[in-house]
Image 1 (cartoon, rainbow, N blue to C red):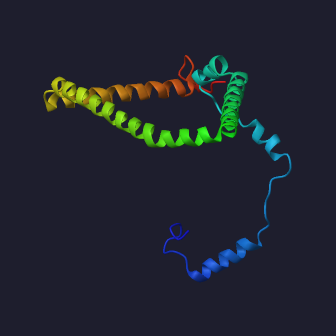
Image 2 (image 1 turned 90 degrees about the horizontal axis):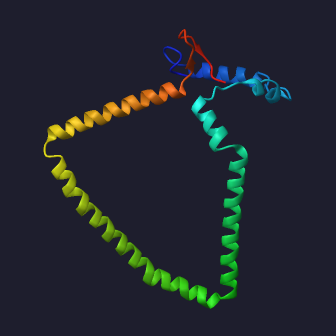
Length: 171
């Protein structure tokens, strides 16, 4: 608030403003405001997104997929709970074996594969990019492609244009 008033606020003015604001009536929207007014607010949806929603992801498929995933997760957890309750000694020994034997092996194997991947990729990149000029040219080309792609997506997602060039909302 100090930035809005040249020279800032005097502390006495600040208290006066707080006193004035505290005397104002509280405003709350009337019941049904959301249904009457906000339900009429229309937000344009890009055509490509609308087609994706209609063809690929209709609401009934999304709900069915979420229900299947939730049921699968519940059944998996229930099966694990039954197995642990049925064989508690095997479950604890299995977990101990997993943490003592398998986990270090997984970490070591992952590091080995990652190192092999770097050893394979690094010489390939250095032989393909012999000079800084090539790197600069490829970087410029990549930036150009990204800019053109972004512009294309903006055009696809933006409001449609009629034949006369007048913008109108896509419904």
